[in-house]
Length: 319
Image (tube, rainbow, N blue to C red; front, side, top):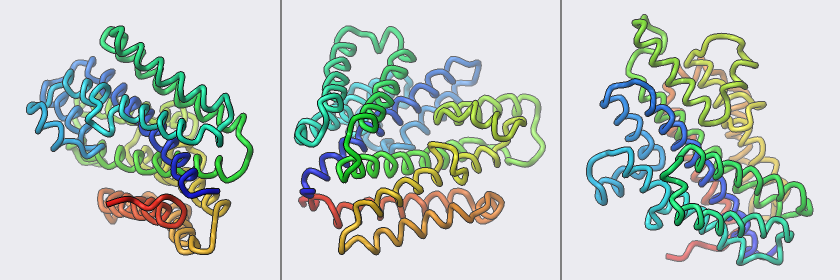
């Protein structure tokens, strides 16, 4: 496969996944903001939303004070923000258009229709009327795109590069989410807490789980009250949780092996080593050594994998 074609397919999938992840986080923040809470707690949640995407400097330079409505506009409609939903879906559609010949008709039409429908919805004010419904639509279109891709594409390198982009982006986002949201809880995970603290923590951990469609999964796996260490274990180490770091790295390693070439053996080795650490790690060890340090190192290694994949397979970045 031509490296330029692989590049477009890889980034098409990354941008589609990024749009979905942004919609998930915004939806949970929006729903949580409707609960009774202090202004300080609400502002902390919205600030965390910007921190996850490393957008605090660019937001404050443009809008100043952290304010829910402005953040929603910034993360949904601002085309100058490369992580906004409109920017991600536009980039996904443009990458798809560049390689229409490598996609099935259904896969291309799904991407194109998503972009056209998004513009119609934003012009008609549907986002402002019902943000929750809009975020559900973005998630649905991402699910549809993945389903159509897997259901209609030939199982060859084109599909493997698309899945590689999807799961590398998902691993990065899940790690950022866990890191920021765990830091948002001020009380000790395992210490005594007041009834009010416990009530807040329940909604906090529930929101984290719902943002990755993990609330029902948690109940099924643990059959217990929501505990932070188990939330961390589910989102980091469980291979059967679709959005966990372990599950994402399983997919990254599998698809890297399928597209391997003469110069990618070191990239595959590093991905395999990172996957092995998740496969044989324990949540007690991670929490004992520091969750933030673990996730920071994980993000650095995922970003390095992305750089190595670009160097080994894709179009070199222009300076």
